[in-house]
Length: 431
Image (cartoon, one colour):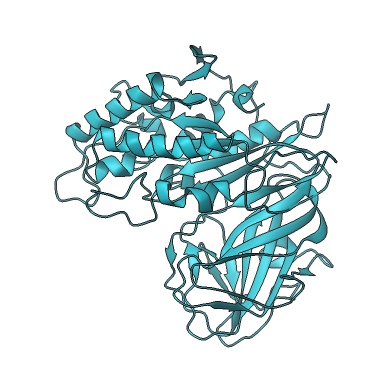
């Protein structure tokens, strides 16, 4: 197997660095609980630190992708979000991106999760929207809550509880959130204020309506958005395990945060399973909003973004895209990101094993050739600030296949593969 090679550009020179880590010296701590302050959301990317030392940053986010099949009638949901930086205030954003009708929210709370749906006593606080306890989100619309003063810690789970009085409501959702959230039974009414969580008798691994959580903080150095497909979303990782490649990157960046003046890095996952760069000419048609069309909603609308890891293209190629069309779409995204002053880091497309004709995810040697052409452009020609060569991290001695110990299904890495991807990212790219 080959270890990962990371290339990055600086002043028109290309440097190549090989990063091979020893697990005994690169230990990762999963539980980071330093105490400091904050939260918030701005609808444009802004510098992380304001003149007074505190600013809103997006500390958690997800991409809505479709209308869920769950039907909610006069019931409450309790969505779980693990924030990645500490702070003293929080605010949330709710999206009704795929809703066909306005969504009525009659009550909303944010609290600190203790276990399951149970909350830390006295932590549940009512959310207001423009000073009101109720809000209606138009079909396709988005709202941001007012700020709530709340001391929060990095890697703490927040519980966002919402009651909708509507009947037969299908939620706009992120389908594969890989986090357990909770629902009360239909007809149970408003139980958003519950501390015990006993009323939340059902579970879901989807994320309903909740788009992002912002934290007001003076201790964040950067905000990294992972913008990609299922390999960013985390297919083949563990439910409630928080073991995707960008999770491991965040643990490594934040393990010493709060000490010796080192700030925190917020990690925002904006991956969607099956996502593509472009829409035109793909067969079958994309099942989710392509990257070129969701960039504003899922990246540029977040607060304090400094870096974007762009990691997509495999699903375009699977649907018949040429190398030229993938490259053109990526260039369009990069131009918009750089126009906002963001650092853009690309990831090469990892191998995909051939599949028999007629299977759901057809892949053959001609598509591998296109993947290799796009990867060569990413490595040597594209206008990125850095390149994460995930292809070389996970491929086998046959470079067109995933190393068996890292392989889940011929398309995605397994948990060990994701760990290696996150472990081999040079941290200096984000300092």
